[in-house]
Amino acid sequence: MENLSDELSKLMINKNFGEQFKKLSNNVLKDKDVNEFLNANKNKLDHQTIIKSISKLYEFVNERDKVISGKNSTIPGYEPKLELSKDSINVAYVPTKSKLASIKNEKMLKKMHLVSLPNALRKIDLKQFYTDKDQERIDAYNDILQFIVDYEQDSKTYHQGIYLHGEFGVGKTFLMAAMANELVKNGYELMLLHFPSFVTEMKNSIKNNTVAKKLDRIKKMPLLILDDIGADDMSSWIRDDIFSVILEYRMQNSLPTFFTSNYSMSEFEHNHLKFNNKGDEEPLKAQRIMQRIRFLSKEVKITGDNRRPQ
Image (cartoon, rainbow, N blue to C red; front, side, top):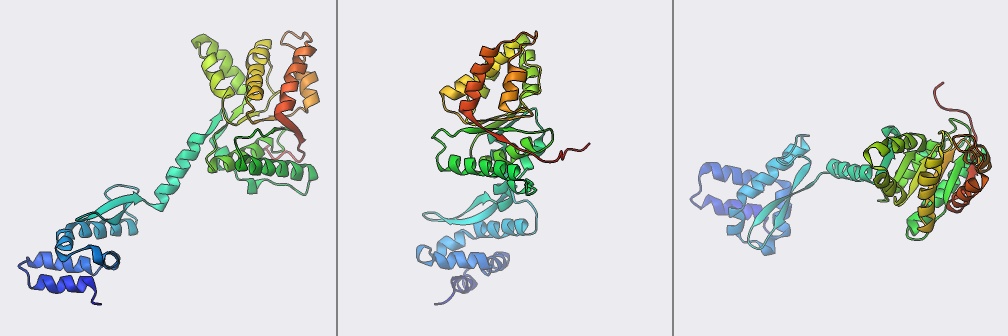
């Protein structure tokens, strides 16, 4: 079977086309990608349709070559693709690989809400977590992996979160951020929130009457990580009207919730929650809050060296 581009070249020799048009057409029709497209659709095309579409074929070759050479096409981030419609050949523009990666990254940025934490956490990967042959670190890592597997298999079912506690700088936030990045890669929405900074923000929100709006957004987040609880001076208002409300809503609605803290659960209850900002003991309120935390999360200890810059 004679190649279609050769057939067309012979046809145009005998037609009253200008020399410039003939030269441009022949160059375009000899292009490998154009040739493959025309021959793949040979049964659907007639010569007249192809000749009328030379400008489209030329556009395709010209724009494709721009992309190959590292330049932007007419539509930056997109590359040309030949398409066949009912009676003509058209050029469609589809995202390049780099554009698709950029789109995916933008979607991930929208899915992962960082509150008062550095953007560098978005780049952390689970493979970067050092277990150091420390059994508690290995166990903590495996617990995180197990949650990811279980959650991705069935995100509609309730999955208990983790209360990760350990000394300053051992990698609690790092491990939570690594888990968060793994989940957002697969399209899950979550929030990683630095609780002490959030406390300050909520106090400031009283002035502009935005407490309820901010609280509503946080308590309803599909997956929530409360980082560094116990590091703030928790007032009775924060404890009872903010923290407790978040926990109660998430418990009632079976929403996965994670915590990091320098305190164990017992220490958090007796050394932090038990006392209000005036120093008065309120053990029953502390117990009620801890019941919610224990429902929402499994206590996991992590040990290791302080890896933060001294």
